[in-house]
Amino acid sequence: MAALNNGVSSFVLVLLALSAAPLAVVAGDPDILTDYIIPANFNPANITGDFFAYGGLRAALTGPAPVNFTVTKASMAEFPALNGQSVSFASLFYPPGSVNPTHTHPRASELLLVVDGELSVGFIDTAGKIFTKDLATGDMFIFPKGTVHWQYNAAVSQNASALSAFGSAAAGLVSVPVTVFGTGIDDDVLVKSFKTDVDTVHKLKTALTPPPKKP
Ligand SMILES: *[C@@H]1O[C@H](CO)[C@@H](O)[C@H](O)[C@H]1NC(C)=O
Ligand SMILES: *[C@@H]1O[C@H](CO)[C@@H](O)[C@H](O)[C@H]1NC(C)=O
Ligand SMILES: *[C@@H]1O[C@H](CO)[C@@H](O)[C@H](O)[C@H]1NC(C)=O
Image (cartoon, rainbow, N blue to C red):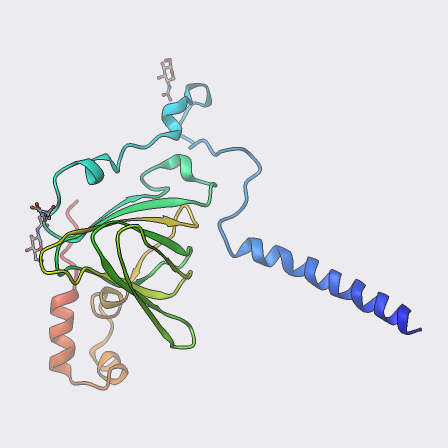
């Protein structure tokens, strides 16, 4: 009888594990039923190796160094062949003292590789615990999916560069400062949320409201 019960509970456990499996798949980019996805405006007969190649990071990796912190993305928006492949990339450049401000990627974890200089990085988990690390050239850091994180080049004169891989073709970016202070949330809500005064909220709003996008 005990053996039968064990057999039944193992069977139930297997069923539970199987029913949980589709949830794990849904948590990433959707799976596709073709090798790749051809955009609607492309003639399938015209697809060549060019479609699967993207040169948009060339300037970032071989051109002159930018003056400010710069991110160059290679996601589905820039590189349509990534649609359905669940991966994307970014090249990041940090002049001395620059920061990639606190942000999250709602649809992907990020694996960052420092290719030049040094970076101080960190993230906060959903329990509110902070994790930080000083990285040297060649070091990697994983920012878990959806967590608030940042990178900082604290050096006085040395630039830093990194490459980041994402587990989604469209990782998405939510900047914490711009989302909170640059999108028109009511002053009262911000004053109460941050336990501060209207003047402070206005200062932050002025600093973080993005300039209107040029057409
Ligand atoms: C596909 O290739 C043909 C012949 O080279 C060309 O005439 C046509 O414009 C191309 N179509 C697209 C959608 O690029
Ligand atoms: C650092 O980047 C700046 C541009 O922001 C560039 O002018 C300078 O040459 C770079 N320094 C080094 C050591 O590569
Ligand atoms: C660099 O950042 C400064 C300060 O935010 C800004 O005034 C300047 O226009 C930026 N330069 C470039 C080339 O984006």
